[in-house]
Image 1 (cartoon, helix red, strand yellow):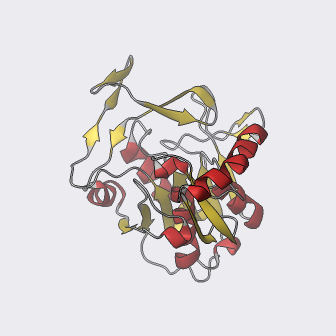
Image 2 (cartoon, rainbow, N blue to C red; image 1 turned 90 degrees about the vertical axis):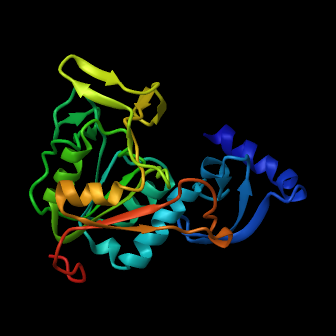
Length: 257
């Protein structure tokens, strides 16, 4: 990590000379900064050199702050936290609880000091949280209908699920793999993304399309709003940067219990 940060720092003069930087404000470290385009895949290569956040993390924090200005006072759960946005939320929200998924550990157990929760069957109580956060998780869930329903269950009335996931606009959802009694059956060529707790990576189960909001409404009744931001002054440019907000009916979150 230190070596990577030094490498990025040393690259700043070259990036400035080639016009691959711009000044702006980072919602993760909450500072004025100079954003760096270290590669062509901006979703992962458009960095804040101060906190090393990437665009989707900054987009999620922007929506969190605009929709829930009182978020630091909320009871919040994040599944599979990773990166500077998760760390910033953890530091500033006393009611924050994090978990990772370890397939061989039951929900609610402790795995090397980390709480394990399976999104498809969580050990958390009904109506326990004001806000649920997932960042690029739901493309990897084998039974997403169970996971969305479980999130609705653990949310208080009026609670919300704030999340990012790659959205293939102009397409319908494509299921790439399904669960079978004897394991996972591939319907498409296997694709893996990086996983902070598994070097083997995470299998992509679903390529979500334009019907995602309808799917969520069908399986758990929550209504979903999509936020699309493209603003270089906030370091939010690139691919697949939509932020989703699914709300459980009906009570306002202005005064969480």
